[in-house]
Length: 250
Image (cartoon, rainbow, N blue to C red; front, top):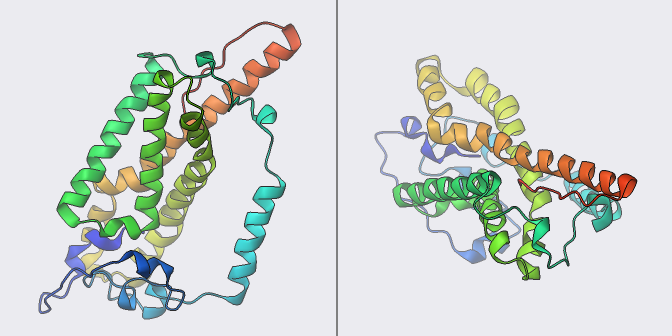
């Protein structure tokens, strides 16, 4: 997850150099951990190597393949979601300068500033973490939603907005669930020395990490609310033949 900021766990006697990451590193199969030893500049080196590096269980391949197959087989149609991807009618998007538009625009700017500050302070390395990849997708989708009213006749904007809905939703909930209910308790109670527990908690609940690991769920949950609204309005249109307009918040 986001272990790259735990500077209090570095060995002061060692000199750390940020590793150089190339695109080709992502294509390597063995080892699958990009940074040697699963450590970035000594952060969390006190944890056992198998927790930082680990190894793929043979069943992992079949589990991933099965998950992909299940997603493809159970993929709902556009009509089931009440989403009109090919429509050029702007009524399917949020209105310009509406409350929903200001939310998405503000969220996009806030998340972008957080990204920029992180990269300026730490570098581009955090992008290799699942947490930051999820946050990046969340940022992009808020920006696309804010742009939709201005590109009502552009199919690809709506297409990519909807294409990101599932990955953003799943990754945000996974980040929050795995970190808050699995990794954080495990690291705190099992591996963090008593003299460092308070510092670890302070770091874990810092503003930046709270945004990445906790507030990402409320941000992405607006999409669930919007989806329920769309389904409700579509049902009203089918039962009463009224032209109710779906409102997309996320």
